[in-house]
Amino acid sequence: MRTALTALGMIIGVAAVIVMVAIGTGASSSIQAQIRSAGSNIVMVTAGSGGFGPVRQGQGAVTTLTADDAAAIKQEIPGIRYISPGLNTRTQIVASAGNWNTQVQGASAELAAIRSWPAQFGSFFTEDDVTAARKVAVLGSVVRDQLFGAGTDPTGEIIRIKNQPFQVIGVLTSKGQAAMGQDQDDTVIVPFTTVQKKLMGVQHVTNITVSAENGVALDTLSDQISALLRTRHRIQPGADDDFLVRTLEEMASVLTSTTNTMTYLLAGIAAVSLIVGGIGIMNIMLVSVTERTREIGLRLSVGARDVDVLMQFLVESIVLSLAGGAIGIGLGFGISYGVQRVMQWSAVVTPAAVMMSFGVAAAIGVFFGFYPARKAAQLNPIDALRYE
Amino acid sequence: MNAVISTRQLTKIYDVGEVQVPALRGVSLDVAPGEFVALTGPSGSGKSTFMHLLGCLDRPTGGQYFLNGKDVSKLGSRELARVRNTEIGFVFQGFNLLSRTSALENVELPLLYAGSIHAAERRERATEALTAVGLGERLDHHPNQLSGGQQQRVAIARALVNRPTLLLADEPTGNLDSKTGIEVMGIFQRLNMERGITIVLVTHEADIAEYGTRIITFRDGVVLNDTAIEHRRIA
Image (tube, rainbow over all chains, first blue to last red; front, top):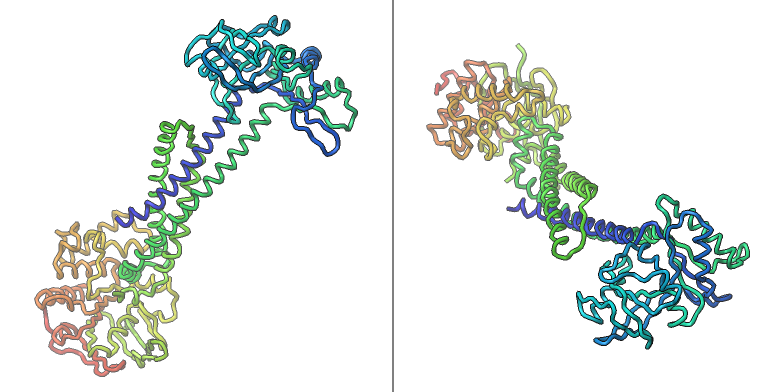
């Protein structure tokens, strides 16, 4: 009973470490999976922050990025499969049944291919629609749900964006949350030319999404795009870019390192409970040494050396903490599975986490068992025998 | 003939805080092989202290102690453990058996500390020792399933299993009724006579002492009397 309670400290500690690491690992792997679902071969060009001297105007404030830049990139740089210049505006959308405030994304017809985003109903708009700047809209599933009701097919309906009628020509399948947490389905996609001419009255775009052919090195591609845009924008050598070229891989690695930090933090907190468990073991071992003083005396009197007694108690404490550790690993697996099922988080128990907590359990057994064991080994045989 | 035990001016002083309590004030005596010595004396006379020194369970403050011709009063704790394991068998008043292990495992205990002895040989020797004390039928019994006399016989088997030259017994009959006490003394006598094992036994019961061949009486940390028994009792 008492031994079981002691081992419980160990069990909880090890289980906590495993679950925390599992959740952390699961989070970072699901982030990576999401970024991969957004397209792993994507290079994003965004208009840079403008302004002179100390005044910085924030990302997208520069109006030098244009659809012609996108055309030039596609034409002059090899290895590009799809390209989509875009600009966004946030506005209220009104349909006969309701209204909803959302992001209106201007894009080219190739965006659907870049993001491998099929339509649930209807279809994506065409190159023709873009050239003619037609007032057609493709709805994300969240917007469809809000305006027309869940699961309905609103193709052919008319919605009003900034008081102008747009025909709904398609609904996209649900893609879920993006890596940054925003809902990718809460959007309306229209031709970027329509946004430029009909909604905002501007000539520039704020971003260009580039999708590379398979096997093209994204780093090289980014460099080529930068060089081309610098030439086209006539940026002097040494001057800052007025745009920003990023690959999703880079964004992924930033996010991954963030979640890793979180994982270490959680594991660190869980490790504290491991140490508390270790102190519990030391406590029980000290009690055990006291209770078994006469036994120790007897063992010494029949010829046990101090190292024999030391080893006996050390082994006992290691067995105790390893048993606790083993049960804790089992419990950790169970809890991770439960978290996965109940909270819909992905939790991945890695062999490394299991090995590490088992190793730490053994180390704690040695570390916290050593003092009581040494205390036992240093007993004088006759004092131990006479102990009442 | 070389003495099994030979002490020269052996002293032991206990430090109790600021006071120093002398328990032994210089004891010199020799015990020859095959002797059966009973140490007697009132409590506080130093007989038990002397016994612990003989058993290498404690170290003398001064003087010399030769066991089988070797000066063990200067040995380190590892060497003393070796001496206790191979040359001395110890029987206690309170039996001191491990309660959660069988009689056989209790007897095997000294062999575990003796170094590389195979499990099969340990078992064989422990069985042999238990048979020698008449417990060959109760190898797998646990101490709480045995009577006091049987427990003490397990303890004697444990003391014998490493084939020591010297058997030390500290009030071995103290926790037993007189009948089982005599049975236990019979075992000691048989071991002494048939195997020639030297036995030193502490007792405060005069009749128990008479099973031996020699009585040494202690008082105030010195030997008061040292006499051979002419008419030895036979158990």
